[in-house]
Amino acid sequence: MSVYTELNKHEVSSLLSHYDLGGYVSHQGISAGVENTNYFVSTDQHELVLTIFEKHSFEELPFFVELGEHLHKHHCSVPQPYRQADGQFIFTIKGKPGVFFERVSGGHVEHTQPYIEAIATALAKVHLATAEFNAQREHSHGLAWVKRTLAQIQPTLAENEQIIASKAIEHISQLPTSLPQGVIHADLFHDNALFDQQKLSGIIDWYFAGIDSYALDIAITLNDWCLNDDDAVFADNQVRFMAAYQSVRPLSKDELQAVPILQVQSGLRFWLSRLLAQREHGASSEAITVKDPELMKRLLVRLMSSLGTIL
Image (cartoon, rainbow, N blue to C red; front, side, top):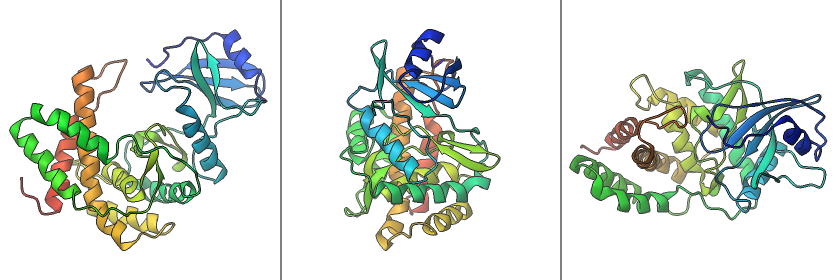
């Protein structure tokens, strides 16, 4: 359940009074997500999502909502955050920050293969748009996070897992240091995209976003959207993705060579983050979804195997 902060009709109506979004009709808690409280809110003019941030500070949020506005203005498939009459995005309710967003139609897709070109071209458009977005925030789970987290967790891994992690770092050390950079989504798995009648309606959950290489964002996305039934990256799907992406934003030779290594970095990152989540929360429950780290470990091994590493 993601409604940690309960709001009644009067409280939601009072928040809406600071916007030009119409009068209150109804609101309903959303039983999805983990970290934030979310409500669907209907007015007589709009369908909205009200998000109350349970963990992010007031100081962190301007980056995310200004990024969302920038991407929306650049015609990317990103829900619009709404400004209050005084021009501010962020309100305070019960001591916590909150924002109203556009509610986009559609839902998550289970089978990604029909949507590979759509998500690839959308990601390329995002990268072109963020090249014009002035930001200082680094991607929170980039290479520095991977190395720091691995140093903490590696002594607790089984011997074969320590070998897997060490081999992954060997691959990552071969990355060039001057890849094109900008703000990336950094978590564009298929549960962070919404489709309505087979058309992409929204890329959501930008709370890992920050500056890193665009090629890393491609690698992260490939590792989820281009899998086959055995949870391995399917070469034909990857070719389709890369062709669609480059129809919008052509890649340099260095970027093309870096993508397979960055897929290894992505696999290592998500394996480690899932291990940490599993150790903190145990199995999934009604309150939280804990993804299986073993699936990502197997993908990591397969990615390194494709680069010639035998484990």
